[in-house]
Amino acid sequence: MLAFVGAGIGALAGLLVDYLGAGTPAVVAGAAAGAVIPQFVLGAPGR
Image (cartoon, rainbow, N blue to C red):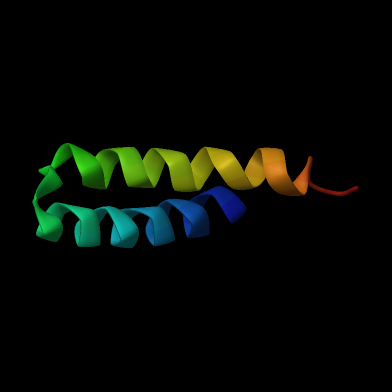
């Protein structure tokens, strides 16, 4: 669940970067980063 929420927030951040001129891959990169980074920061679920 955390990955889905992080991906959504990352995609929104990617849209902002896309609007600033970085291009559409910024949306994909933001979603990927938003899905992966919280897993490392918060640790494994259930701990």
